Length: 293
Image (cartoon, rainbow, N blue to C red; front, side, top):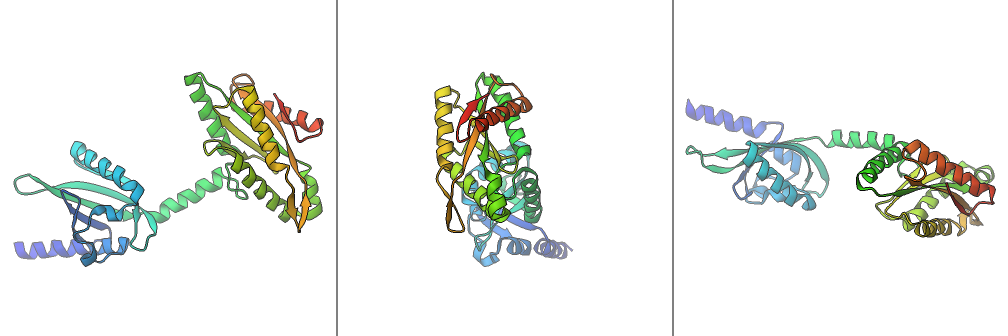
Protein backbone atom coordinates (compact mmCIF):
# COMPACT_ATOMS: atom_id res chain seq x y z
CA UNK A 1 0.00 0.00 0.00
CA UNK A 2 2.80 2.42 0.96
CA UNK A 3 4.66 1.55 -2.23
CA UNK A 4 1.58 2.21 -4.36
CA UNK A 5 0.91 5.48 -2.53
CA UNK A 6 4.49 6.63 -3.11
CA UNK A 7 4.22 5.74 -6.79
CA UNK A 8 0.99 7.72 -7.15
CA UNK A 9 2.56 10.69 -5.39
CA UNK A 10 5.57 10.56 -7.69
CA UNK A 11 3.31 10.38 -10.73
CA UNK A 12 1.21 13.32 -9.50
CA UNK A 13 4.36 15.33 -8.80
CA UNK A 14 5.69 14.71 -12.28
CA UNK A 15 2.50 15.62 -14.09
CA UNK A 16 1.41 18.68 -12.15
CA UNK A 17 0.69 21.53 -14.56
CA UNK A 18 2.67 23.94 -12.36
CA UNK A 19 6.44 23.85 -12.10
CA UNK A 20 7.78 22.20 -8.95
CA UNK A 21 11.46 22.71 -8.14
CA UNK A 22 13.18 21.00 -5.20
CA UNK A 23 16.52 22.26 -3.91
CA UNK A 24 18.89 21.31 -1.13
CA UNK A 25 20.00 23.72 1.59
CA UNK A 26 22.60 25.31 -0.69
CA UNK A 27 20.17 26.02 -3.53
CA UNK A 28 21.24 23.12 -5.74
CA UNK A 29 18.36 21.61 -7.73
CA UNK A 30 17.83 17.98 -6.72
CA UNK A 31 14.46 17.29 -8.36
CA UNK A 32 11.86 18.84 -10.61
CA UNK A 33 8.84 17.84 -12.64
CA UNK A 34 7.65 17.96 -16.24
CA UNK A 35 5.94 21.28 -15.55
CA UNK A 36 9.36 22.75 -14.77
CA UNK A 37 10.80 21.41 -18.01
CA UNK A 38 7.90 23.00 -19.90
CA UNK A 39 8.36 26.34 -18.11
CA UNK A 40 12.14 26.67 -18.13
CA UNK A 41 13.17 24.59 -21.16
CA UNK A 42 15.74 22.36 -19.42
CA UNK A 43 15.46 18.58 -19.30
CA UNK A 44 15.78 16.89 -15.94
CA UNK A 45 19.22 15.54 -16.84
CA UNK A 46 20.40 19.05 -17.75
CA UNK A 47 19.14 20.77 -14.61
CA UNK A 48 19.86 18.38 -11.73
CA UNK A 49 22.96 19.53 -9.87
CA UNK A 50 22.65 23.11 -11.13
CA UNK A 51 22.16 26.12 -8.86
CA UNK A 52 18.60 27.45 -8.78
CA UNK A 53 20.07 30.82 -9.78
CA UNK A 54 20.26 29.50 -13.36
CA UNK A 55 16.50 30.05 -13.48
CA UNK A 56 16.72 33.68 -12.34
CA UNK A 57 17.49 36.83 -14.29
CA UNK A 58 21.12 37.52 -13.21
CA UNK A 59 20.52 41.01 -11.82
CA UNK A 60 17.59 39.68 -9.73
CA UNK A 61 19.26 36.56 -8.39
CA UNK A 62 20.97 37.88 -5.25
CA UNK A 63 17.96 39.87 -4.03
CA UNK A 64 15.56 36.99 -4.71
CA UNK A 65 17.72 34.51 -2.79
CA UNK A 66 18.03 36.85 0.19
CA UNK A 67 14.31 37.63 0.19
CA UNK A 68 13.23 34.00 -0.06
CA UNK A 69 15.58 32.76 2.66
CA UNK A 70 14.55 35.55 5.04
CA UNK A 71 10.83 34.98 4.48
CA UNK A 72 11.02 31.20 4.76
CA UNK A 73 12.99 31.45 8.01
CA UNK A 74 10.63 34.02 9.55
CA UNK A 75 7.24 32.95 8.18
CA UNK A 76 7.65 29.36 7.02
CA UNK A 77 7.01 30.24 3.37
CA UNK A 78 7.58 32.84 0.69
CA UNK A 79 5.23 33.97 -2.08
CA UNK A 80 5.79 36.53 -4.78
CA UNK A 81 5.95 37.40 -8.46
CA UNK A 82 9.42 37.28 -9.99
CA UNK A 83 11.08 37.23 -13.38
CA UNK A 84 12.51 33.97 -14.67
CA UNK A 85 15.07 33.11 -17.33
CA UNK A 86 14.24 30.44 -19.92
CA UNK A 87 16.95 28.22 -21.37
CA UNK A 88 16.67 30.08 -24.69
CA UNK A 89 17.36 33.42 -22.97
CA UNK A 90 13.82 34.79 -22.98
CA UNK A 91 12.52 36.41 -19.80
CA UNK A 92 9.10 35.72 -18.32
CA UNK A 93 7.23 36.06 -15.04
CA UNK A 94 6.15 33.45 -12.49
CA UNK A 95 3.94 33.50 -9.45
CA UNK A 96 6.01 31.55 -6.97
CA UNK A 97 5.62 29.96 -3.54
CA UNK A 98 8.54 28.46 -1.64
CA UNK A 99 8.30 26.31 1.51
CA UNK A 100 10.99 24.60 3.60
CA UNK A 101 11.48 20.83 3.61
CA UNK A 102 12.31 18.88 6.78
CA UNK A 103 13.40 15.30 7.42
CA UNK A 104 11.78 12.95 9.95
CA UNK A 105 13.81 14.60 12.72
CA UNK A 106 12.59 18.07 11.70
CA UNK A 107 15.97 19.06 10.37
CA UNK A 108 15.87 21.54 7.49
CA UNK A 109 17.00 19.73 4.33
CA UNK A 110 15.94 21.99 1.49
CA UNK A 111 13.10 23.85 -0.14
CA UNK A 112 10.25 23.23 -2.54
CA UNK A 113 9.16 25.92 -4.97
CA UNK A 114 5.90 25.91 -6.92
CA UNK A 115 5.90 28.25 -9.91
CA UNK A 116 3.08 29.25 -12.24
CA UNK A 117 3.69 31.08 -15.52
CA UNK A 118 2.00 34.52 -15.40
CA UNK A 119 3.94 36.09 -18.26
CA UNK A 120 0.84 36.83 -20.34
CA UNK A 121 -0.97 38.37 -17.37
CA UNK A 122 1.98 40.64 -16.56
CA UNK A 123 2.46 41.65 -20.19
CA UNK A 124 -1.25 42.40 -20.57
CA UNK A 125 -1.14 44.57 -17.43
CA UNK A 126 1.94 46.37 -18.74
CA UNK A 127 0.18 47.05 -22.05
CA UNK A 128 -2.82 48.51 -20.22
CA UNK A 129 -0.49 50.65 -18.09
CA UNK A 130 1.34 51.81 -21.21
CA UNK A 131 -1.91 52.82 -22.89
CA UNK A 132 -3.08 54.65 -19.77
CA UNK A 133 0.15 56.42 -18.86
CA UNK A 134 2.24 56.89 -22.01
CA UNK A 135 1.83 58.84 -25.21
CA UNK A 136 1.51 56.24 -27.95
CA UNK A 137 3.38 58.26 -30.59
CA UNK A 138 6.47 59.28 -28.65
CA UNK A 139 6.35 56.66 -25.86
CA UNK A 140 6.96 59.29 -23.18
CA UNK A 141 4.67 59.95 -20.19
CA UNK A 142 1.30 61.54 -20.93
CA UNK A 143 -0.60 64.12 -18.89
CA UNK A 144 -2.00 61.48 -16.52
CA UNK A 145 1.42 60.09 -15.57
CA UNK A 146 2.91 63.59 -15.40
CA UNK A 147 0.20 64.66 -12.98
CA UNK A 148 0.88 61.63 -10.78
CA UNK A 149 4.63 62.30 -10.72
CA UNK A 150 4.17 66.01 -10.02
CA UNK A 151 1.84 65.23 -7.11
CA UNK A 152 4.39 62.79 -5.69
CA UNK A 153 7.14 65.37 -6.13
CA UNK A 154 5.03 68.00 -4.36
CA UNK A 155 4.55 65.74 -1.35
CA UNK A 156 8.26 64.88 -1.26
CA UNK A 157 9.30 68.54 -1.53
CA UNK A 158 6.89 69.51 1.26
CA UNK A 159 8.47 66.91 3.55
CA UNK A 160 12.03 67.89 2.64
CA UNK A 161 11.41 71.63 2.23
CA UNK A 162 12.83 71.62 -1.31
CA UNK A 163 11.76 73.01 -4.68
CA UNK A 164 11.27 71.89 -8.27
CA UNK A 165 10.49 73.43 -11.65
CA UNK A 166 8.05 72.79 -14.48
CA UNK A 167 8.93 73.78 -18.05
CA UNK A 168 5.92 74.09 -20.36
CA UNK A 169 7.16 73.84 -23.96
CA UNK A 170 5.21 74.51 -27.16
CA UNK A 171 6.75 74.00 -30.61
CA UNK A 172 6.66 77.28 -32.55
CA UNK A 173 4.75 77.16 -35.87
CA UNK A 174 4.31 73.41 -35.70
CA UNK A 175 0.83 73.75 -37.24
CA UNK A 176 2.47 74.97 -40.45
CA UNK A 177 4.43 71.72 -40.68
CA UNK A 178 1.25 69.65 -40.44
CA UNK A 179 -0.54 71.88 -42.94
CA UNK A 180 2.35 71.91 -45.42
CA UNK A 181 3.78 68.39 -45.18
CA UNK A 182 0.96 66.37 -43.60
CA UNK A 183 0.43 64.77 -40.22
CA UNK A 184 2.69 61.80 -40.94
CA UNK A 185 5.68 64.09 -41.40
CA UNK A 186 4.52 66.11 -38.41
CA UNK A 187 4.56 62.98 -36.27
CA UNK A 188 8.12 62.25 -37.40
CA UNK A 189 9.16 65.74 -36.32
CA UNK A 190 7.57 65.22 -32.89
CA UNK A 191 9.46 61.95 -32.43
CA UNK A 192 12.73 63.61 -33.46
CA UNK A 193 12.06 66.53 -31.11
CA UNK A 194 11.57 64.13 -28.19
CA UNK A 195 14.79 62.31 -29.12
CA UNK A 196 16.72 65.58 -29.04
CA UNK A 197 15.20 66.70 -25.75
CA UNK A 198 15.95 63.35 -24.12
CA UNK A 199 19.63 63.82 -24.98
CA UNK A 200 19.86 67.00 -22.88
CA UNK A 201 17.76 66.06 -19.85
CA UNK A 202 18.63 63.65 -17.06
CA UNK A 203 17.17 60.17 -16.68
CA UNK A 204 15.64 61.28 -13.39
CA UNK A 205 13.69 64.10 -15.10
CA UNK A 206 10.21 63.52 -16.51
CA UNK A 207 9.52 64.68 -20.06
CA UNK A 208 5.83 64.36 -20.92
CA UNK A 209 3.68 65.08 -23.95
CA UNK A 210 0.39 66.64 -22.85
CA UNK A 211 -0.98 67.88 -26.18
CA UNK A 212 -0.37 67.89 -29.91
CA UNK A 213 2.90 69.85 -29.82
CA UNK A 214 3.01 70.65 -26.12
CA UNK A 215 5.50 69.10 -23.71
CA UNK A 216 6.21 69.51 -20.01
CA UNK A 217 9.52 68.85 -18.28
CA UNK A 218 9.50 68.11 -14.54
CA UNK A 219 12.90 69.18 -13.27
CA UNK A 220 13.96 68.38 -9.71
CA UNK A 221 17.00 69.64 -7.80
CA UNK A 222 17.58 72.60 -10.14
CA UNK A 223 15.95 75.58 -8.46
CA UNK A 224 18.39 78.47 -8.82
CA UNK A 225 17.07 80.90 -11.45
CA UNK A 226 20.43 81.03 -13.23
CA UNK A 227 20.53 77.23 -13.50
CA UNK A 228 16.90 77.16 -14.64
CA UNK A 229 17.63 79.76 -17.32
CA UNK A 230 20.66 77.78 -18.46
CA UNK A 231 18.48 74.67 -18.80
CA UNK A 232 15.90 76.58 -20.82
CA UNK A 233 18.63 77.77 -23.19
CA UNK A 234 19.83 74.17 -23.59
CA UNK A 235 16.31 73.00 -24.48
CA UNK A 236 15.85 75.77 -27.03
CA UNK A 237 19.27 75.04 -28.56
CA UNK A 238 18.39 71.35 -28.87
CA UNK A 239 15.49 72.24 -31.15
CA UNK A 240 16.93 75.11 -33.17
CA UNK A 241 18.90 72.85 -35.51
CA UNK A 242 17.00 72.17 -38.77
CA UNK A 243 14.69 69.17 -39.01
CA UNK A 244 14.70 67.24 -42.27
CA UNK A 245 11.41 66.71 -44.10
CA UNK A 246 11.42 65.22 -47.60
CA UNK A 247 15.18 65.87 -47.78
CA UNK A 248 14.54 69.56 -47.06
CA UNK A 249 15.72 71.42 -43.93
CA UNK A 250 12.87 72.85 -41.86
CA UNK A 251 13.42 75.24 -38.97
CA UNK A 252 11.50 74.77 -35.76
CA UNK A 253 11.87 75.93 -32.20
CA UNK A 254 9.93 76.23 -29.00
CA UNK A 255 8.55 78.71 -26.53
CA UNK A 256 8.95 77.85 -22.85
CA UNK A 257 7.07 78.92 -19.74
CA UNK A 258 8.53 78.11 -16.33
CA UNK A 259 6.80 77.59 -12.99
CA UNK A 260 8.54 76.74 -9.73
CA UNK A 261 7.22 75.05 -6.61
CA UNK A 262 6.20 76.51 -4.22
CA UNK A 263 6.69 80.07 -5.52
CA UNK A 264 4.35 79.68 -8.52
CA UNK A 265 1.83 77.41 -6.80
CA UNK A 266 1.53 74.39 -4.55
CA UNK A 267 -0.66 72.08 -6.63
CA UNK A 268 -0.52 70.53 -10.10
CA UNK A 269 -3.26 72.60 -11.73
CA UNK A 270 -1.88 75.93 -10.52
CA UNK A 271 1.67 75.09 -11.57
CA UNK A 272 0.58 73.95 -15.04
CA UNK A 273 -1.60 77.02 -15.58
CA UNK A 274 1.20 79.33 -14.46
CA UNK A 275 3.74 77.67 -16.75
CA UNK A 276 1.24 77.64 -19.63
CA UNK A 277 0.55 81.36 -19.23
CA UNK A 278 4.29 82.10 -19.13
CA UNK A 279 4.75 80.05 -22.30
CA UNK A 280 2.21 82.20 -24.14
CA UNK A 281 4.10 85.29 -23.02
CA UNK A 282 7.15 83.78 -24.73
CA UNK A 283 5.15 83.19 -27.91
CA UNK A 284 3.87 86.78 -27.94
CA UNK A 285 7.47 87.95 -27.83
CA UNK A 286 8.35 86.02 -30.98
CA UNK A 287 9.04 82.52 -29.66
CA UNK A 288 12.33 80.68 -29.27
CA UNK A 289 12.62 82.09 -25.77
CA UNK A 290 11.41 81.48 -22.20
CA UNK A 291 9.63 83.36 -19.45
CA UNK A 292 9.10 82.73 -15.76
CA UNK A 293 5.57 82.54 -14.42
